Picture 1 (cartoon, rainbow, N blue to C red):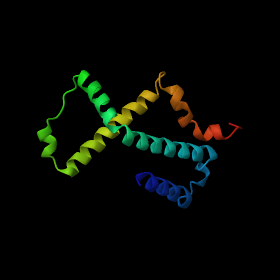
Picture 2: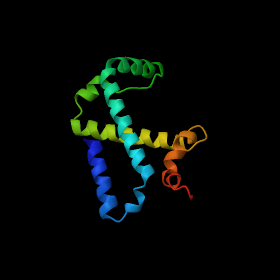
Picture 3: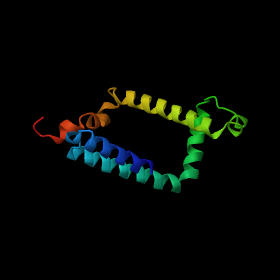
Picture 4: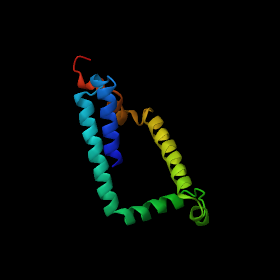
Length: 123
């Protein structure tokens, strides 16, 4: 649902706000690929959720990262949990994106950065 809202919002902004030239063929392919990856992650996530949870919890425990107690989460209102989750997610996405701009991550990130120029063979 969130994906559909994002796509509808993007189409609205591009079409009605004069950004049609940014809707390149390559950008469309990238959108389809992103939707496919999200769908695959959801299907695999639901199918392997318990195994994945055990695996990731083992890694998390081995790193000795401090955690909040169960009592904290049991008494935290849902709205606060959502805000904490969104802030943590945004921070991690920022860190990953910065890592993608290093020599170790650039090879996989370069295509995203040059999406418009790659679709135009004259560039």
